[in-house]
Image 1 (cartoon, rainbow, N blue to C red):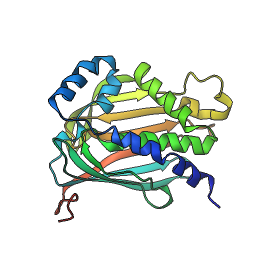
Image 2: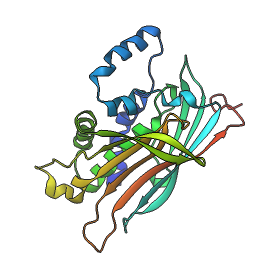
Image 3: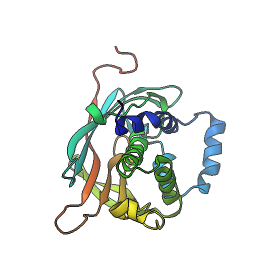
Length: 246
């Protein structure tokens, strides 16, 4: 018998493929001009997350390693990791192989042959969508839609500074609460209605992503807030090209 979590992950496999494919931007001059012309149609949050060439400052071949932790949940706290193997790609992008979490938590991600955006952004959001659907019994389409609306209409962007590799760097923090205005499903979502997301981005960091986190407030004073956090741990030059195996 297939358990609920496995069935949900299989159901969303097609969506994962579509989301990761969006990380690849057509590199012809006409496509670049068209995207530049259309960029003003999107919010600053969307431009930073999905219309920025995060991979341009990655010297290849390289391995980008991220820690992934879930804390504050007595029933499901853990430490895991996410790895990106990055090589020269098609046209002017990068070829990226994604290993997202391990064991039962592992989520399949197809290789991206011409990546400009960092696939971990899409995967972090999709992991959130799938996990929320699994835990509440709701539809992943609903959670995905609320995420999209929040990024376009409600997300804020702040300039800040952070520490990376022993240095202070400039960052931009994208923050949003996608479910804060929810009315019809407040009882079913519980504290998830107050869930906050913060994406810390910087062009001074290989891959553009320093940290992404979500935080769900504690149910009461006897519990902790539940935090899911993906953070850049290391960037290493690979000894071989992961796209060729040589």
